[in-house]
Image (cartoon, rainbow, N blue to C red; front, side, top):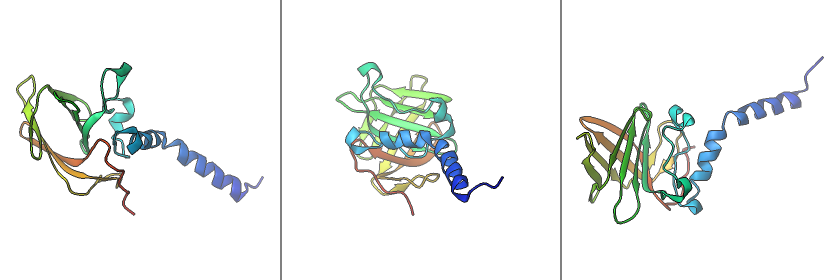
Length: 167
């Protein structure tokens, strides 16, 4: 029996589409009308839920005012909105988690000490940044410092327009 090229093409397209459900879900989360911004590329650990963005769980938590991510190793930093923002940081694909209840806000970011005494600083520059895995564009280049370790990545403020991916 001979397989038609049309059937073979359809099978390949369906197979590729099945490999991308997490990216489609993140694209919906990145919709500026939704008020949040998320990178199109998801670190492998996020598929298990450990680096998922802070979402309104039963209406108790608002979307972040600023969200930044980086790769290799995967990390996430979020700053909540409101008069008393909270800085949440996950490093090592969610293995280490830190929270700073009242970070000091400066002209270029936030800083403070986690409960275990770890110094954390999240700084940004409002320059176009492209995720090094997905090519997704963001409005800020970010550096996260946790203790003596530095992480580099991209970030976005809530409500910012979506940026195009690299060609």
